[in-house]
Length: 282
Image 1 (tube, rainbow, N blue to C red):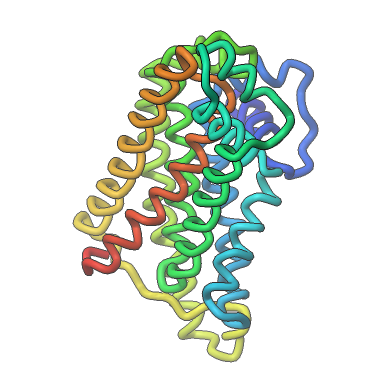
Image 2: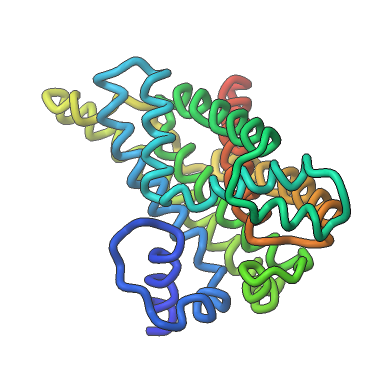
């Protein structure tokens, strides 16, 4: 019951899905951050289902940016705002407390605009390249993005800002391990969904406008191992870079840093996934 309540609060906090929030939502979520990848799975599943239809109707490049729009809509652009503020804070001159003050400014500076634009363009272009394995790539990118928030909260230090403090204080390495195992399970399950979509296309060709023709990926130890490697690479590199920048510029992680980490990790994981596809490993 407590896990269900925590998952419901996580969905209400991280998305625009109309679920009633609890009064103690922040404190409750702070103890259930390990469930964040499950919310990422939900976001990835919804958006990939939209993509299975759109890829049959429109050019891939257009669909990629429409899918990016669907992510921002479902999540309420919750982390995009953090990405922009993070960019402004990095580019601000002065001591760490001044940089944090710049991050909290409602106006958008050149640093935030540039970082946000680059990450969004690369994300949209990457999504447009993933028609053949859309479901797996979409779910993996969203799951690992949320896993990295858990990782940052478990190993990073807080800058003392109200938004990040309870999450970092309540999340430990045990939560990270459980969250990582949950992520591996969800990514493995995404392979099953991808294969179901492929089989549905072959069995019901008359519904091709609703079902995208995609590649079939065997559920083998090798394929799952490759997906875990992609998850690890996609997580570790942006995680370490973001934590290092946060410690240098803000003396720790803020809520905006965690939001930026989510957006950067998604982009990075999609690029890594495409690289493995091009190399013929998946």
